[in-house]
Length: 388
Image (cartoon, rainbow, N blue to C red):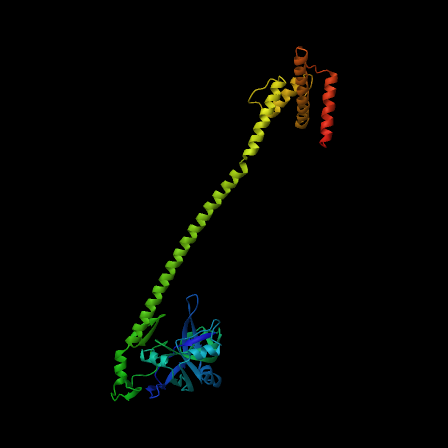
């Protein structure tokens, strides 16, 4: 697990001193023993014990020696940053020589870089230790305080200068025993001889509650925190508004897509049922030819009869003795083809007789020979088409 410890207390500390070379040195508390609340991802609070045997073990104290100091916590994508180039980029100072008194751990701190100095001058003076640890899920009570888990194998990673510590002003860079005087070359520490300086600082402190815990801090620090919180809340509201707008646009997009799908389906149905002009002309011409044949065969037909009924009427008109009961459409179509040939042949004979001999048209007799001839022609035509 990764933990950020905002410890408290001014015990074991030395006030900050600004040096002529532009650096700042002090000694400040960075962590302590005790039970500390941590907010979980689901919003619940888990209280973790940091016991003395872990905090003051040689391995833990050694891990706090030489820690880089950042302005604010800096995280890698998967936790504590492992890229040394980034760590060097963020480092404004260093912590050395950790000491303890069985309650607190303090270190000497040196702020070297200008952005770190400016952060301290602006009121960012609390220290927060970033460290890794194993969290043992073991509940109990320590010094009358219940806890849910124990931190083991605490290993320091960095110190961060932050506006507000976990429990007030104990783990802060002390400025109360000196006033900053800015000269031409550097900021110098001037000793304050007022013996009641601690009382003056306490009178000037304000209390702010974060996650159900009261913190004491200077008014400027609290104002800076509240401004940042207000800005964060404003950004969160903006994000929520944008998310709502995106959801609305997605709903409108889905509705438009459904309408488009419906229109495309109707268009496909219309195209499926559409007959092109060539097909219509073909059917109309076939109907005209069929009615003309019925007229030549002197078949009794009506305009509202189906094509097949007209064909039957033509066959029966040309071959009166024919029975079409139970005959297939293919058979009737073949008989119509024969009838067309016989009607054409008969018409040609009659036209020739009328021109050359002036005789009256002869009547077609559907005898045995003519029926047989028609049948033979039908069989021959079907065979030529590969049909039986």
